[in-house]
Length: 114
Length: 114
DNA sequence: TTATATACCTCCAAATCTTATGTATAAGTC
DNA sequence: GACTTATACATAAGATTTGGAGGTATATAA
Image (cartoon, rainbow over all chains, first blue to last red):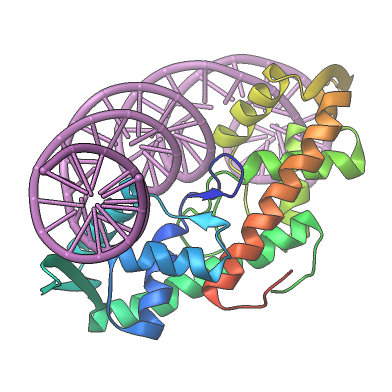
């Protein structure tokens, strides 16, 4: 993950980003996730495939995601969806991340909450 | 670094936290940093020493911090301050982090900007 | 005397990320 | 027809960061 110009930042948030996107869309494939994040951040945040695919596989191994492969236009797409456990875990991890971000903002002396 | 109840989060922000604190206070020692972060976050965020000291040493090696040791109450304190380069670099890294946080919030669909 | 607070430090293991590389199909361009 | 770009998946090597455990030492409070 990186910001427009340079370097990497904030390791640990990728899996939460994935879970958050799937909460809203309930079915996405890897490439779609990279494009959606680019779109949402006006191209400023890019998710690298070398980080994304291992993260997806891990979430699947943890039982938070299930997969379903489809052939579209002659190319294979692997769709990921939240499992039941995935839904509850997503809520928890998102809450945990936002709590952390609130604390980080406190230290950085920005707004106290979101 | 962790949030109140459990697990670790958000690798990459520690050095920026250090730089940010030193922007305001212009002279702090390691233990003081751990206490200040606890204080600012009402005990919710804890910086571990195993992460803090290597981070301080790295920032010093990068030329962003200088040290000055003092004996206070019979105990040695190693004070860290921002160098000239440290000041400019701090501004840049903080801006980079806040830009990232803005983008992260966009994806998580919280407020668009701090 | 024993525990807690203060104050520094290092090493190891685990986790996450970047970069590079690889495979393959579809579509657009020269 | 050849080449590049977009789509779509994947892995491997290396770097970085962090947490946890452990270590040293002094001052203070119980």
